[in-house]
Length: 109
Length: 121
Image 1 (cartoon, chains in turn blue, brown):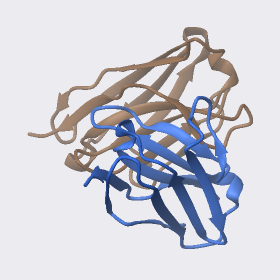
Image 2 (cartoon, each protein chain N blue to C red):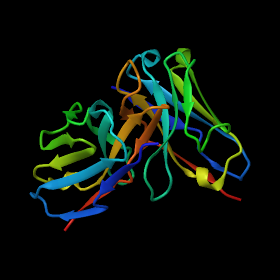
Image 3 (tube, each protein chain N blue to C red):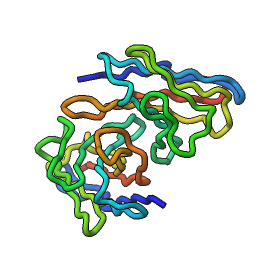
């Protein structure tokens, strides 16, 4: 079973700053199967990035995704007030199963 | 526009049963694989179950295998989750979600608003 480990648990930043969120997989996974979601309190998750680096429909270009082996990164180039939320990575794996990371909370500093 | 609306959540005693429904609209329901995903209070997301477009292929997380049954009725544009032998640890907000790819086995591009299920005596 593949485990996704997100870091940090909480990221304290100010609007306008750059946010870098990490997701490491316990085994090599195809980048095609790695996605990122944003969740605000009381709301359903929203798909931000799929295939490790493709933005979903309507997602602003300040959100970007990248990968390096088993390390995946979500970058928010300049934080807007509406970007403060919890972010989850997710992968589809064999069995099949769908696994989520434990989440990174981006909070206002 | 795509809409997914869950219903059927309730407070139920341990060992009890509950059936969740998800009404889909704004897209051709029968063309898409669907899933149930849950989120315990204050915690992260956990995939629960997945179903193919025709309903002939289903998958379950180990934590619910043998207790939960996913199904769909394409004529009614509806997805279901029958939950039996409920445990306290099944308490969560349950989301139905659409697989982004018509070929399935990818990510979830539309989610319902979620429905709470509480298992407690």
